[in-house]
Image 1 (cartoon, rainbow, N blue to C red):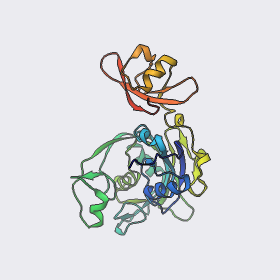
Image 2 (cartoon, rainbow, N blue to C red; image 1 turned 90 degrees about the vertical axis):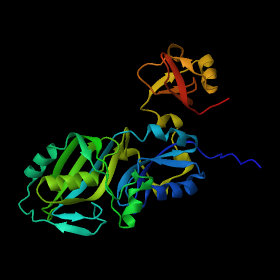
Image 3 (cartoon, rainbow, N blue to C red; image 1 turned 30 degrees about the vertical axis):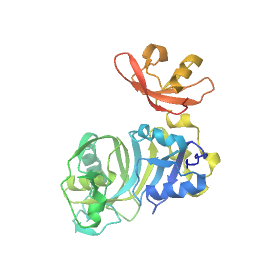
Image 4 (tube, one colour; image 1 turned 135 degrees about the horizontal axis):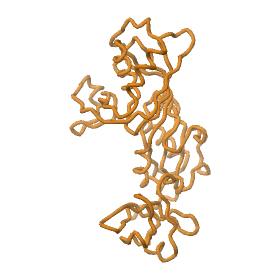
Length: 298
């Protein structure tokens, strides 16, 4: 007995994730709101964090690989003088430090040393896998394992005074590469200043070109808010295929780069004359290109 086709919408949704929800929770809730089980997310947000979470819906789940590597931007608060087991405000206090003499100038000066390529050790509460098991699963069992440092890039790190009456709390604004842990950045900044720190009130303000200004509250999701498939790959090099090329693309053929008229290094989002996304092509051998994802197939 064949499975019934999923006739739900396909495209992109930019959600403003609420606090207290895991990214998986958002996907599960969205399935009911959008009437399809084919939903995935790009770029996990911690349960306590809020802000931009990208959802691929329907056929767009096959394009999530092109969203995950996009750079991110955040705002949050670093609480100096207190370390926690999770590196954020959800954990138990593990150490306290006397840092009453901390000033905005000192924090700004220390923060400048983190701008550029840096190495981070993933926190035990992350989704990184070690020997086939996710770190947060081990952490729940009280197990801590060695983690290899990972190279990330901090493009911008600005520090401002935090809420009035909290002299050891500073607001940070971060632009960074994919894979950066802001809670680790906060903890490392505390250590650099001779003490410790943890993160609170983290909010993701953008993923690539997608910002909070266009994000939809989770409770407001509906099928008519699903954006076109082309929006998922708006950051890729576009290719407008003529009728003959579009026919070859829908058949998943390997093509000569010149025939596709592909400019740049790729990947390329191939659309037809009506503006429908047909496929994403990537470099292959020599001057040829091959389909990585074919969305309209014959």
